[in-house]
Image (cartoon, rainbow, N blue to C red):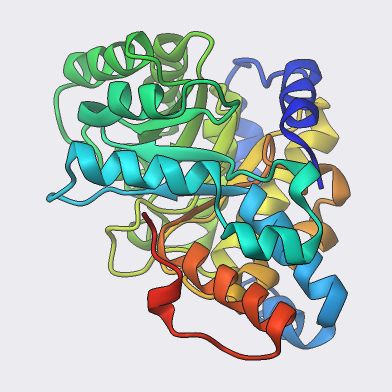
Length: 328
């Protein structure tokens, strides 16, 4: 488990994915075997199981890789402040002591909010290494004029966001207009400056696994630091088949270029058991180097409560009510 200092050091020394020329030959050569993908992910939960001490350790790892998120229309300053308190201490103090992990100074990977609440979150997290991530570019649909989307990125960075979660224009993927998608994402990356950019594909709206693989590659060539499955607002969000396609695109990209791109599944991951499935996927497909918050994140809100509940069961042998694990 990384401490905050180790996490920041890793992020500092990891060579950032640059903007590279668009390689349409590479993009158009991509193929995806759906039946093979489905066979692979169906075997994953059964082949990779962890119990007892190992399970507790993996759940702590999941917490450290979590983008604790609130993206509701009824968000308030108080909601965001309470979320940031939970981000600072994601599990109760008595459980921290029982697990013997106080020296880890465990926190979540980031706090993710709308632009309106970036300054609130930055202030609430002052004195920690927890970055604030802002959803941007007319999240979740991404259909505002390009100039407005670019200005929103710049405003969030100016307000203190160190990570920007952008959304792509899905119609560019559906039309196979890879040059336009590349140009759009490249402009977003340039507007982010030093802030790391997580590129949301909204995979539930892209039609085919091949589209997802091609969009993943185009976004990485355009300089994405992370590729992310979903906004959490689509009818279908993060799934294991989609995630497998995306992490294999990341693996191929690393083998071809030498640059590591992060992965973020988001939407629908609500249980501790589900979080273990994604950790196993990352470990088996990308390796231990990706099992750190600078290269792997969950987009989640309800997930943390269930993980805390499972950790209490590990400590006490009993399951508690969900009300014992509030988000703020």
